[in-house]
Length: 137
View 1 (cartoon, helix red, strand yellow):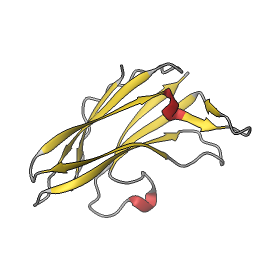
View 2 (view 1 turned 135 degrees about the vertical axis):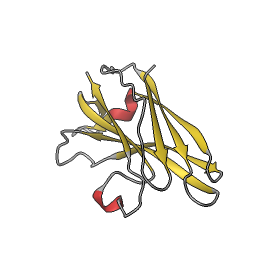
View 3 (view 1 turned 90 degrees about the horizontal axis):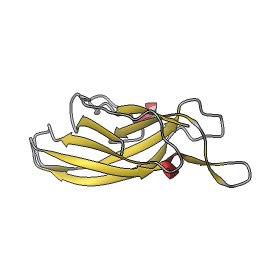
View 4 (view 1 turned 90 degrees about the vertical axis):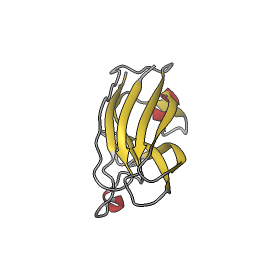
């Protein structure tokens, strides 16, 4: 089982620690990615922690990123929660020209964030997404 542990803050800066990535994932692989989410705001709140996958060298037909898992959590002011996502190799599949779901070898970027990891999602004061690289063979 693959584990990716990260620290992700609701407001303010983000800090990533203890990321462990097994560099080889095959069609029968399963793994867990987890994040510690801390509320650094001034009141209790909810956060939708989102996990996105993007192919590093994508073609023009590939999406910029794909939402593969999410979890809504309630967090007291100053507290933190641990959020885990369980994925398998199907999370990295794409639809080919024949309409079939296929696992395409290559490097993928896994992002845990509070919004899609796109330039238009970034705003002043937004949490910095936590990313890790995974290679599919």
